[in-house]
Image 1 (cartoon, rainbow over the protein chains, first blue to last red):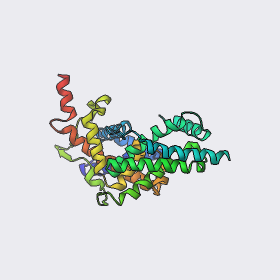
Image 2: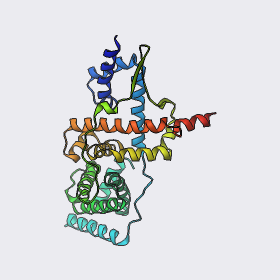
Image 3: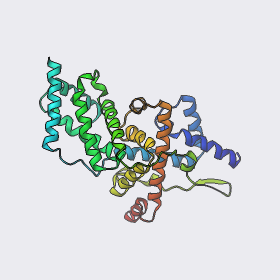
Image 4: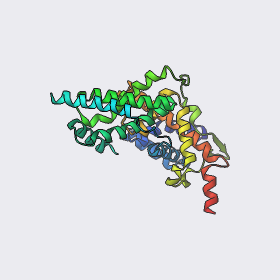
Amino acid sequence: MEPHQHSEQCQEIFALLSDYLNVELPPDACREIETHLAGCPPCVEFAESLRKTIELCRRYRPAELPSPLGESAREELLAAYQKMLAARGA
Amino acid sequence: MDREQEVELARQLIAGAPGAFERFVEHFRSKVFQYSWLMCGHREDAEEVAQETLLKVFENFTQIREPERVRPWVFRIAKNACLMKRRKSVFAPATELSLDQLMPVRSNAGGRVAIEIADWSALPDDLLLRAELRDTLAAAIGELPESYRSVILLRDLEELSTQETAQILDLTEDVVKTRLHRARLAVRQKLDQQLRSPHGATAEMSKQGG
């Protein structure tokens, strides 16, 4: 296979990698990607880095937390909640 | 708290169970704060969005027919509250992310195709949680154009489905998929740069490993 063709196929794979990792591709397209990956270590490496990026996003917890809820803000929410319960019970 | 526990909490809230209000407020206030912090970029705005969202949630709770949909429902309200805030905030101009710019640099030396990429395979999962990578991740998400940022926040950080995200953002599922992919690639690129830097996590790990 000539390098140029190879590169084009890699580009097609790049475009589909998220759908592939999300298991949102039809079986034919999945098989095509898996066949390509089996013979293309750079694409495997890239796919792995994308998978870890997604994993990192899923596990992300912010360093910043909201300030404690102030008393007047809490009162405002509680009043709306009690009104909702009353409307439901009525 | 996973989605099943959230649904159970929503049921308890509707039933007026003791403690449900406090737990609901604590859980969703923190989630909505995180989302709006990364969307709006200002702490004060994020706290206001969290309060406005919870208020709307309680005012309209009788409208929620399916407690199963509590998470997407809350985020739909939060998204609208963020849009209102946006008028007052400084936002990055709307730009498109091109796929070409997000691919790794390729070289083709001696007939062998290689890409310039950090060694991700050597990264243990707990290292992914270290503060420096977490800060890089937050910065990378913050630098994304807003239309991409909203998608990756809902899909990957909040783990909402493609369909739920499309409904929240008034987009087609195909647009959600395209934007998610480009957002992930852009974030991946920033993390890759961090990992390849002399003070990056990979370098540090090699030192620790001796």
